[in-house]
Image (cartoon, rainbow, N blue to C red; front, side, top):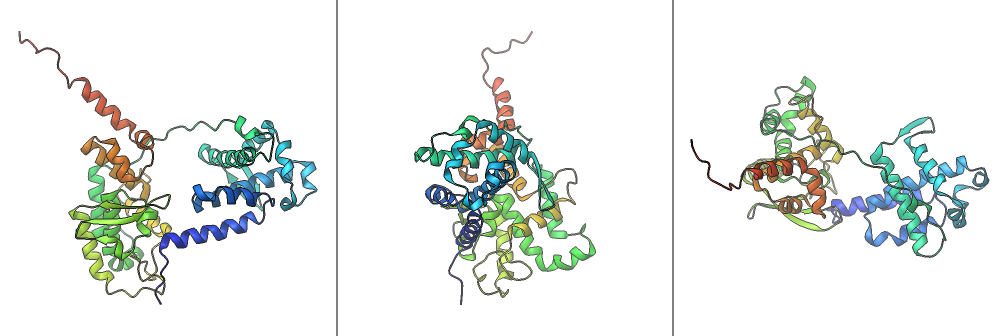
Length: 353
């Protein structure tokens, strides 16, 4: 029987089940927080918050003698009012590097920012509900993020990458064994990522029915759960057509019948598998740049912006809710355009001597 649930619903259910398992290891009052934020957060965000709060309460339990007499699940809500700004700053210092069960963990600026954001949301919820009197997390500023240069492929590198996927002439013998089986799929998948800028999670979630050749569009589920139609050009259409001719003869495992892109095991391809195949092909094209599926998205966004000069269009097509996110990503190109604008308006005709 065909599974009627789509990929995104299954991922949400999986995240929810994992989150409940983690929340069961936290103080009992945490359940109220997760119920309270359910309507305006994604299942993925809630799962990340659960993991981050577990690190926080494990830190308190280990470092605070008063709390070590409790089981973590028995820590009372009143403890939140006893925690000071200094305690939270100590915790932020702790997560930079710590070990647990023989494993070492590190957090860079981005990781520390996420952990503090989770704590700020947590405190804010109980403070606004008037269940606690203090909000020390609000007093701790988020770490300053240093902007990283956006890595993207140049036009000739894009062509070389797609040639490499088609030919496979630089693959190892072991990789070549599978190449004949996956070539059409890999060409379609990478052409789609490079030709539409969709996220890898949106790509692996595609079903066959989501492809509309009449209008050259695909229906995707965006971050946040809303659906959008993204249009593609002839190169993407040709690559998808070629792959679908082969896909029609494949026999998927039960529950994976609808999936557009299948793995060698005839299951829906995973995000990890797409990351690995991008790495496999890209490493033969550009050894210096570490290319991931997200870098292919940046490559598309850059090309679209250079071509159109319309930041709002780029934001819309990439599914950025806030155009400032897009501006931040493509600031270097905006600067190029501003420089060109400096000479665009001529005030007086040049007089030839």
